Length: 187
Image (cartoon, rainbow, N blue to C red; front, side, top):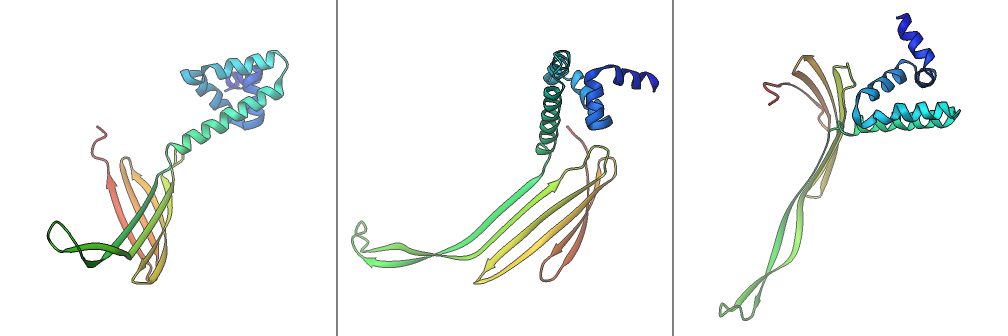
């Protein structure tokens, strides 16, 4: 414990990371030292500190942490969007030459019978958390009448590889549904 504190305080890069971002900043620097794609971050920050440029080091660290947070979240944000259209075409029959048939059927208009659009976006589980949340909505038009509903879903990894989900659909007639999902194999 004391050695870890001494190592953090004696290293200007780790000390600045701790001063600005606390333990999270120190852990980020230590994790990036172990990964090849971020191996130069520590050396870049060390060089900036040795050239007496702590503000440039601060900005570099902040950009790296923001970029890491964005990449982590953007790769794991589940989204889903659907658009369904049910259409009918109206045909008109014309007299004419249709290869000797005498009549030609041409589509003259298209009528949309129904349209349904839905969208969902989820917030992924944070590291160490067992909870996630999904928000979404549906809109539908059928025979000139429309409806809109919102959806809120809450998920929990009750035991490893098993999710329990509760979904609340806020339509004209609200309903609640519950489901479970188990991962049998990850191969």
